[in-house]
Amino acid sequence: EDQVTQSPEALRLQEGESSSLNCSYTVSGLRGLFWYRQDPGKGPEFLFTLYSAGEEKEKERLKATLTKKESFLHITAPKPEDSATYLCAVQAGNNAGNMLTFGGGTRLMVKP
Amino acid sequence: EPEVTQTPSHQVTQMGQEVILRCVPISNHLYFYWYRQILGQKVEFLVSFYNNEISEKSEIFDDQFSVERPDGSNFTLKIRSTKLEDSAMYFCASNDVYYEQYFGPGTRLTVT
Image 1 (cartoon, each protein chain N blue to C red):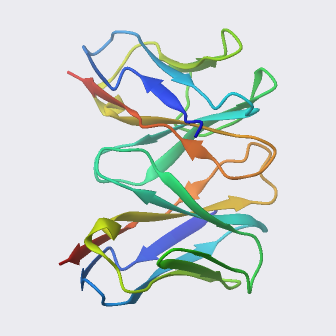
Image 2 (cartoon, chains in turn yellow, red):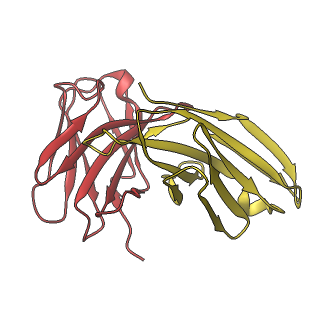
């Protein structure tokens, strides 16, 4: 069974204070690992896809990295508008239906 | 920028009633999904749909649930006889030949 665990559950940062969010996973042959941002009462917003260990992707203040067991979402000099829940999801290679298995998310709060 | 849209944004229904949640996926996408998120819990996969048939479904997606693509633009989720535990946010998602799934804003279903 595919499993995704995210830590910490919640993270409070001061504006400008860089940090990292962790996503540990167990999957039968990783097809892709996905990062999403979710604002309260809204749907997940796609951020990144990572396909293989060693891959990195960047978007503004966010950088996602992938190893064989975990992924990190690094946030550099965050701003209050980066406050949201960040979700990690995996898709298994033997998955005919493309289902995503999500972690519980990290709730990020950035104080000005 | 193309978006997945969902209606209604909030549906209140009585236990035992049938509800239909509607989605309009992004127009050139081929794969369609329903997920749900009970308040405070993980996003959970319900069903995936491709080429006018279900390609995968979870244990949650029992005989009370059905999906349909009645025309070239809409994708619906029907719950035949709602239960209190069906109260959740329901998200529709879609993707093209690439694996990134794009989510709609969700329908909040409240069963009383």
